[in-house]
Image (cartoon, rainbow, N blue to C red; front, side, top):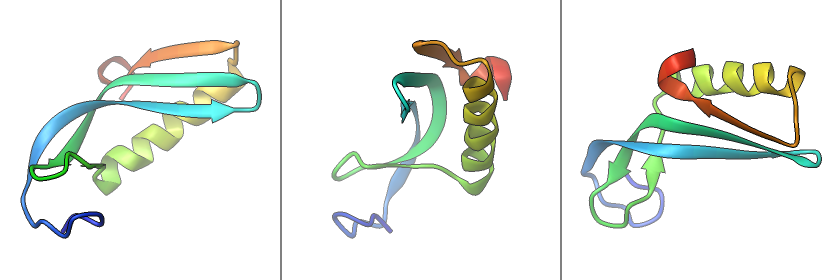
Length: 75
């Protein structure tokens, strides 16, 4: 159920996940998600959330001012 509009229907979608870390930005594109068909809010499965955490941790070690990572190539 959507936390914002309380709608119960979602559909598979793709999104971009952005993390601000210190003075840097980490952008992870092509992230699979579930999208609320009423308000458009996006949610990650537990598996995707865990992979995003690993990708962000990896990016922090290699940090530049801006990092753009393709989820499909790293997950």
